[in-house]
Length: 334
Image (tube, rainbow, N blue to C red):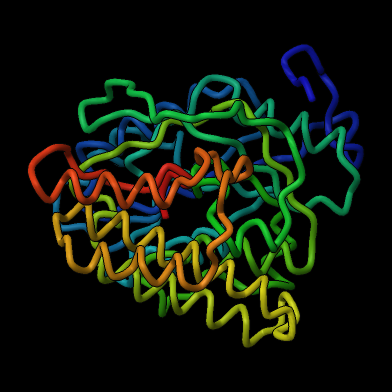
C-alpha cells in the first residue's frame, strides 16, 4: 500500500481534513521534549493540536513548554504515571483522531499525513493505524536493528499483539471514539500499558500497520524496557488480563502456550541484557518447554531456530565471547 502520492482524506471529511490531537506525556524529559514537540509542529498536516501533559516533572519541563506559547497546549498535573498522563490528554483532545508521541521520540516528516491517507483508503471499521519504527540513540544518532525480512503493510489482529508488540505508542494514530468503548490506558500498569490498550482495541476493532518507518524511537538508559523485573511483571499481567477477558477463547490452549512461550523468550532477552545469566537461561528454557516449534518465525522477524541460537549466544556471553542483547528485536518498546 503506497501513500506518498495520495492526497485522499478520510471519507467522513472529504472537504476538510479531520483534526488530529497529538498527546505528548512528559515526565522529567526536558532535554528530549523539544525534539518531540518540534517534530510534531513540523508535520505537513492540519488541523493539528499538540497537547503536552506535564506529569509532575521536577526538571525545567514547564520552561520548555512555555517557550512555545500558543502553538501547543500544556496541561500540568501531579505525577500519576504514563497511563494517567495519556488519559488526561485523551480527555482534553478536541479532534476526532488522536496520536501519541512519547517525549523522547521523534516523528519523521509526513508521519501524520501518510497515516491519515492510509485511514482514507481503509474501511471505516479500521480504528487504528500504526507503523514500524526507526531507532536513534540518546544523542539522536540513527542506528539499525537487524531485521531478516522486510516489513510489509498489513492488518494487525489481537492475536498478533498478544504474541508480541507490533508498534510503539509513538507510531499510532487512532479514532478518539474507540477509547470511549474500550476505555483508557490502565493506570495500574507502569509499563506495557500501550500493549494492553492495543489488545483491547483490536479485540473490538480493526488495526493496520504500515511497513515503512515514520517515527524514530530513542533508545537510552531510562527506557522502561531496561527494567526487566518490572517489564516481566507487567507483561505477565497484560497476558493474564487479556486471557481472563476472553479476547481469544481460553479454550484455545495451544495459542496461549505460544503467547506464554514468546513472553518468556522476551523476558529472557531482557534479563540477559542486564547480565543476569541464570534468570535469562531459566526464562529461555521455560519458553522452549511451553512451545518448542518456533523453528523459523517470519512474522516475528527471527531466524530459523532462533531460540536455540539465543541459547548458544548466552553460553558464549557467559564465557566472555559475546555482548548481551539489550532488547528483543520484535518490538520497539516492549
